[in-house]
Amino acid sequence: MKIAQQLKEKNIAEYLIYMWQVEDLLRANGCDIDRIRQNIILRYPEEERPALEEWYGNLAGMMRAEGVMEKGHLQINRNVILNLTELHGELLASTKYPFYNAAYFKALPFIVELRQKNGRKEESEVDTCFEALYG
Figure (cartoon, one colour):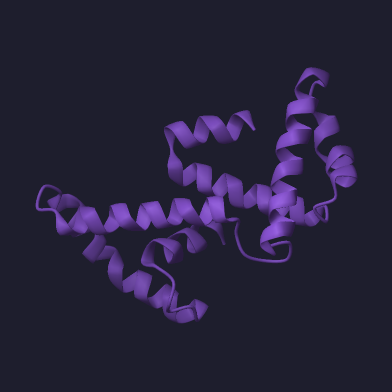
């Protein structure tokens, strides 16, 4: 929980990858709070456990409610991708960031290749890049 908060403030990309790892950790425990408590929470100091149980429990509940217990991502994490996709578009449209444009067009052939390989051509380029980083 603390790690997620710190990453969200300092590095949104690392935050998103971390949250995807948390989703997979919860999936590995069947989104079952008893298993999460036994396998994850009990490894932390006593004083941190109540907050962690609430945080993991809430995330597990959200995963059940949103139907992402087997695959996919929570809406809160998809919103991060949407925000980054919007920022990406704004940076590309701006003349203030020529280095961003140059880096993007240098990476574009590889992004296109990744999209063809994963078979999800409808996802954003940003999503494709994060999937590649996570995979």
